[in-house]
Amino acid sequence: MSHTGQGHRHDLQAIARHAMIARGLLPDFSPAVVRELSGLTPPAAKSTPALQDLRSLLWCSIDNDDSRDLDQLTVAEPLGGGAVKILVAVADVDALVPKGSATDAHAQHNTTSVYTAAEIFPMLPLPLSTDLTSLNEDEDRLAVVIEMVVNQDGSLGSSDIYRAWVVNHAKLTYHSVAAWLDGSDPAPGRVATVAGLDEQLRIQDRVAQTLRTVRHMHGALSLETIEPRVVFEDDVLTDLRAEDKNRAQELIEDLMIAANRVTVRYLEARDLPSLRRILRSPDRWQRIVDLVAHLGERLPPEPDAVALETFLSTRRRMDPVRFPDLSLTVIKLIGRGEYVVEGPDQKTSPGHFGLAIPAYTHSTAPNRRFPDLLTQRLLKAALAERRAQYSLEDLNTLAQHCTEQEDNASKVERRVQKSAAALLLESKIGQRFDAIVTGASAKGTWVRILHPSTEGRVVQGFEGLDVGDRVRVELIDTNVEQGFIDFARV
Image 1 (cartoon, helix red, strand yellow):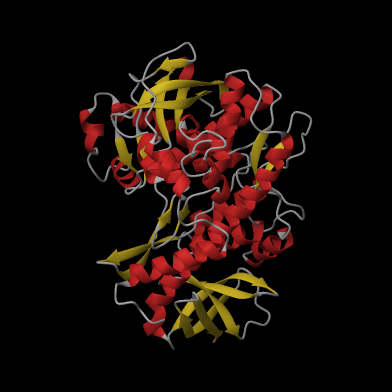
Image 2 (spheres, rainbow, N blue to C red):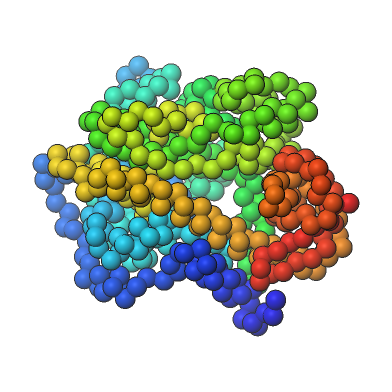
C-alpha cells in the first residue's frame, strides 16, 4: 500500500469508507438529513398523565470511556424479602426521529452504527445520537422505562413499561466502575460525591451477578473472547491491544438482557408482534462434540446448551489462558444471531441458544441499532393503545434486512481491523506464530494469532485443518489495502 503521508488513521479511514460503500452501507448523511437536523429542538420537560417524572431517582449511565451516545440509564430500589426493583431508562429516540423522516430512512438503511478501527459511522447524526437523544449527564431527557422486579433467587417477578422524564446524575465508565467494584481503585467522580450512588451501584452489581448465575445454570454460555482495540499515537498505528470484559460491563449486560426479556413479555402479553433476536441450535454440533471429546470430555449427540455450558465453565477454571481460543472456536461453530418476527399467532421462533432464553429481543440501544428503535415504536404504540406503524409483512422484511446489514457491518469492521493488523505485521514477514483455526470451508481456511490478535488466511498447507485445530504458521505476505494476511502452515 502506498501510504498517503497523512498517517495510518487517514489510510484506514479511506479503506473504511470504501468498505462501507462496497457493502451497501451509507458512510455519510444526505442533505435531507442535514436539513431535518437544523429544525430539531428537544421537547419541553413537563409531566403529563402519559409521562411520569422520575428525574429525582439516582439514575446513572455506565459505558465505554469514549462513548457519547448514551442509550440507557439504570437505578435500583430494594424491596422486601431480598427482591429488588430494577429500572432501565432507554433513550426515547423515536420522539425526535419519527418514522418516515429522512433521518429514519438513513437509520433503516444502515440499521446499525459501524465501529471501525479508524472511524465510527453512526446510525444517527451526532447532533442527535450524542446530544438530543443521548441520555447525557444533568440533562432532562425523555425515556421509555422498563421496570422489573428481580427476586432473591434471580427469577423475574412483576414488570411494567412506561414513558418518563429522567436525568442522568452520573456519566460513568466501565473501567473506573469495575476497578472500584473490584477494590483496586477509589470511587470514580460522582460515585464519591453523589449521596447514595455508591450503594446504588453495589445493589445493581449484586442483582446482575445473581441474574448471570441463574442464566448460566439454565445453559447460557460462558464465552470469553479477546477483543483487540486499535491504539493510535498521533494518528500512527502502534498496537492492537486485547481487552478483557470487566465486571461493570457484565453488570450492564445482565441488566439489559433482563430488560430485553421484559420487553418481549410486555408485547407478548398484549398479543402484539415483536422483533425477536434468535440464535439457532448449532448445525455443526457434531464438530463441537468432537472438540470436547479431544479434550477428554463428553457432550450429548444432540445440541444441549446446559451440557455445553457445564463443559465451558469447567474449562474456564482449568485453563483460563487458552479459554478465549476455545470460546472463539465455539462461537464460530454455533453461528451468528439473526432477527425474526413473531406475531400473536406465530409461536415458532427458536429462542437464543447462547443466552438460553426462549424469547428475546433488542430494545435497549435505539441510538445505535435500528431493531431497537423499531421495537421502541412498537412499545410506544402499545402504550398509547394505537395500531403499530408496521404490518407483519413490513416487520418480516425489516427483520431480514436488519440481519443482512448487521452482517455487512460486521464484515466492514473486520475488514478494517484486518487492514490495521496488516499494517502492524508488514515488518514481520517470515516470522512464525502459534495459531488456532477459526474458519475452514471451501472458501478458505483462517487462523488467529495472539500477538497482535488477528486473523489471516492459510494459503499453503491448509489441507485437513478444521475449526479449533492448533497449528504453527509462518507469515508470508500482507496487503494493507486489501486487508490480506497470508500464512503458510509450518
